[in-house]
Amino acid sequence: MQHTIKKSALLIIIILLFTNCKTSDTENQLNYSYTEFQNLDFLHGYKKNSDTSYVDYGNDPTHRVTELKKDNKRIILFSEINLDQDRTEIYSLKDTLMILNLGSDQYVSIGYCYKSGLHAEEIISIVQSTDKSKIQKIIKAWRANPKSEKIEKLESLENLDCFNEYY
Image 1 (cartoon, rainbow, N blue to C red):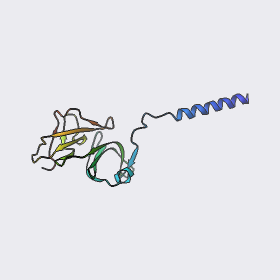
Image 2 (cartoon, helix red, strand yellow; image 1 turned 60 degrees about the vertical axis):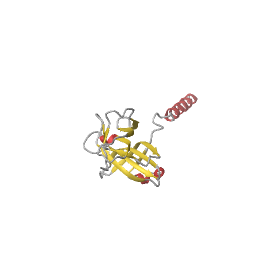
Image 3 (cartoon, one colour; image 1 turned 60 degrees about the horizontal axis):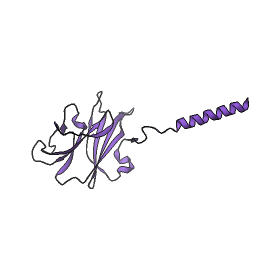
Image 4 (cartoon, rainbow, N blue to C red; image 1 turned 45 degrees about the horizontal axis):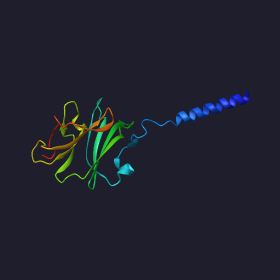
């Protein structure tokens, strides 16, 4: 009887170990929380170029898109915003976008493009500089999608209007 109980207990422990070691579907997702991006080691040496927050639900900002720059590299951070008990913003990094080697007449624009059904602050674009109020050439654009928690390339630039933030 004792031998059977020991075997059963051992079998249960083995089953529990295997079910707890199962590979998670979210294994490749980012899992960084921070209050300041400088606290993340992999962003050492980057400086903030621009950022914006937006409200997807409720009254407080829920997401932040931040552009960081180091030499000819740009990293876009897409983060969810949570407030701690002191109402300090705690960012949960959801996705990143690396942009390399912008042309001398190009820049990253966040929050200055408009497309029906999207918050302007969700749209990240590479645009060509202009001296007009409306951007004439949009090179690429992405959406920081709060539902999928990913930065997604906008396949169509149709009906996307960007305005010159430096005008």
